[in-house]
Image (cartoon, rainbow, N blue to C red):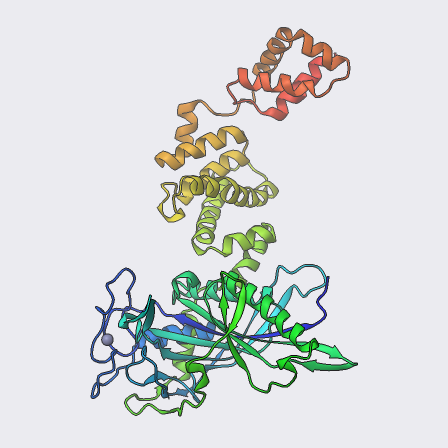
Length: 504
Ligand SMILES: [Zn+2]
């Protein structure tokens, strides 16, 4: 059922960059599993008199991301001090970018798995992308509050969208696409559960009241740290704003944005107090850092260094390999899987051109066969055995060989499944396994006919049933012949030959 209101959402996303060192000092940026307060130096804990130095790798990563989402890189950008007091910020200010960010504008287009009646594609514009350092991490342990400064000074990109998002599902889908772009670029693992990607969401709802279009004030939901939380919190808050408005609550008169948090356990938003109340950050230019300059040549070189991005790859997989749209999505959403597919596809083309037994049409169809076997069988077995794709013993070349043998009908599907299992366990060669196990499909008509006659003679009752009209019983005979052939006969061929003999 459509909602009685429209939803308007804008997001502010912080992405932690995968640099070797921190934003303005040489401390390691890899604090996973490290003791608190061991990756620190006078610069990142803000001792007076220390001088920050810009991490070039972080700026390059930020600029690559900016270009990937079609931002315009400012020829000159600069850093500013954002002043506020909080225990996680020992300098008393955060180094960020204010009026001259690294990138401005930009957009991405996403496909939304929305139900009927809602839009299934969205064009989401960006306002800006700027660089900054992260604050330290506060941990609350009973009555104690602890600070881990390891995170202080971590390079971040803050990406701000325009309010172009129209539903909580769109917000989630958009974030997943942004994460994928960051992963394709290799600038961040963008793992929300690990805090690499954090999101604040601004939401308001629009409704008709006495024939007039009205809008509620904005709620800002802070620190959403999973895709599920983004979607659930937005669904909840939009509905709350609507209900409050029609009931004549505070949303009727409130002028300012409020800040709320999301209580995952209770499934509700909660009014927040704290540093967000201090609105005046008194930004001023950071005197210790030079401005950043980008020439046309710099920007062209960065653009040339971008890899193929997910949206383009999805389209290309569908046109180049004629695989289904759904499969192209599943493959591309996992970079390693997409690369395994692509390598296997190119090997498959090679096998088929060498073997030369398939028509061009069958060759084209074999890419879909490859996608089916990769997604439905290979990945399923790997998941069962808890083997990550990157650790598998099966090379794309061997996998392609397996698919070629299926496409050429050298082995049938159940034999192929057996071969695949052995390949995963041992890393052995497809043809070698087929030979050793005697799995090559029998298409010798004379031999199969012999087996069919043997089975017919041994199953008089079943034959009588079939002749009496019980056609299903034929499959029993097919099964028996397959068994006699040790699984190497072509089931379709067996069926036809049986029918032929029985119709006489
Ligand atoms: Zn440091």
